[in-house]
Image 1 (cartoon, rainbow, N blue to C red):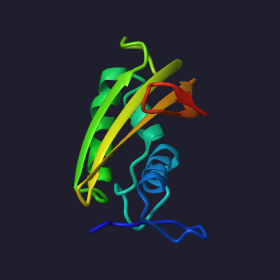
Image 2: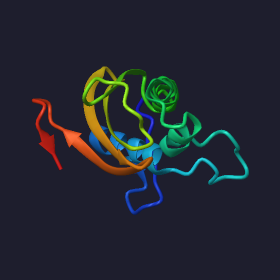
Image 3: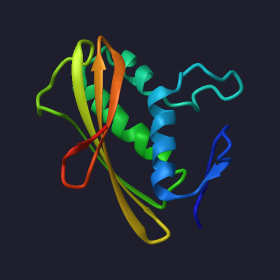
Image 4: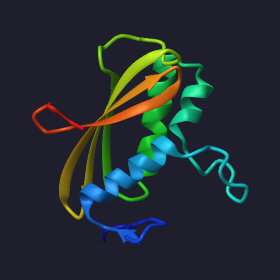
Length: 139
């Protein structure tokens, strides 16, 4: 059974795979950890994770992997993540950095892969780039 993603837009509940992952990743990247008083700790946020670890890349990647996987498992049967820096080094995320997030999800027996490049500047998310299957960038 497909678990739809609720939105506060005219789309209502989103069920198609491409839109669903876009909404989920957008919510994760742009949400504010303190945006709710009723459900403390239930909102996950990339900026909060970066702030919590002071930009230290291995801690950010470790927690990002765990929290993003848990979040996506609310909507998909199986989730496989790979998160790494774009240049393969342990750079400091508090300055300028690029993270590549490769997400492989399974829903109703259908396997889909999505790859995003996150660029941050001075601990702020500045750009999200969608990678095509052949590794080229689609903006």
